[in-house]
Image (cartoon, rainbow, N blue to C red; front, side, top):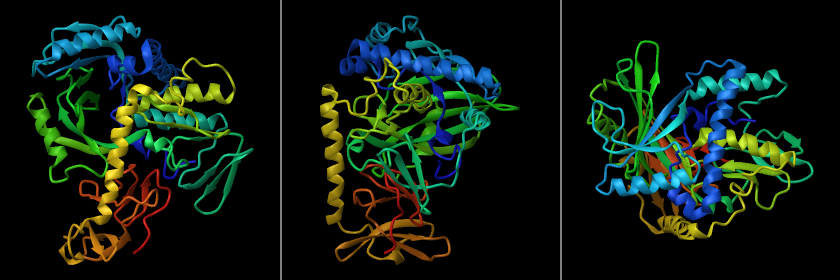
Length: 447
C-alpha cells in the first residue's frame, strides 16, 4: 500500500550512492556498537549492494548500475589524522582493501589525501524501482497506489485502515514510510529529521571520473556522476539542516552550485534541483525489525543517508524475522535497542525538540495576512492560537491550524518547497495543508 505512487517518496529523491562507507564513520560506529557491530554494519551494507546487483542481473534491469570507487576526503587542517583513524577502523570492520591515496582522481581540484573505498556502486534508483515493482507483480504481488493508511494496529491479525474506510488484515505488517506512522513517540525520540539539498549540473561526457565522492565537513557534501544520452550530470548534495529549523533566508541550491563551480571546471548549467528528507538515528544505524511492543508489526526507518542499502538489507532481514529464521544482523538493527554511548546525542536531540514547543509563546511572524506576499506563507498569532496562513498566487489566503497533528508542534513555512514543515519530528504538509510526510497521518486542520 502506497499513499501516492511507486517512487513518489524519498526513493525518487535519493542520489543513489550504493556504499558500505557509512556516513557516521567506522571509528564512531565501533565506539557505539563495538568491533563486532561495526563489522556487521559493513558486511550487511556490502551484502545489500550485492543483492541489488544480483536482482539487476536476474531481472535484466537496465538502470545504469556500475561498480565504482568511493573517495572520502577531509578539507580541514587535521584531515590526515582523521583519515588514518578511519582507515584503521574500516579495516578492523573488514574493509581490508580500503587504502589512503594521495588524492581523488579529479583534475579540476586537489582533494588532498583521501580514503579509497573500492567496490562501491551507483545506479538510477527509479529505473531500478519500477522494474522491481513490475517483477513483484509478475510473481503475484499486488501494489495499491493512492491508498493512504490512517491507522495501523497490532494484533492477530494486524490491521491497516485506509483513509476511505477500508480495512486490510494481514499476519504481518511492515511500515516502511521513511519515518513510522504507526508509532506516536517511541522511535521518534531515537531519530531526527533533516532536509538535504541536491543540484544536478550538465557536464561533458566523461569529463569527471565516475566514482562516489564525499568530504568530511558538517554538513558534508556528496557527489557522483549520472550518465545521460548525450552528456553526464554531476549530482552534488549537501547543505543539510533539521527539518523546519533551517535558516531559510539563504538559498541552499545557490550555495551548492557555488561550491560545485569552485571545484569542477566542467560544470555547465543546472538542469535539476531537489531536496529530500533523511532520518538520522542517534546511534548511526537504521531501525529494522519488530516495532517495540508489537507482535505482528515491523518497521524500517532511520536510514541516515543510506536508504538504498538500508532498504535492501531490510528486505533480507525482515524476511528472516517474519519466517523466524536466524539472522546475524537482527540485534544490531533492533528498533528496541538502547545504545549507551549515544545517550548524549539522544538527550541533545530531544532537548532540541522540547525547545520547539516554546514557539507557542512567541509572537506571529507577521501581524496580519495582508503582510504575506503571494505564493508564500507565514504563521500569525490570533489570541492564544497560531494560524498557518498561505497566500496563493491570486492573493487568496488559506488558513490552517498551525499545530502539527502528530504531537502539536507549530509548523514552519518552507519557502524552497512551499510546504509547512514540523520542526519536531519532520511531518510535512502541502501549502493547503495536505500531509505529505509522516509521522503525521492526517492533514492540518482548517482554522
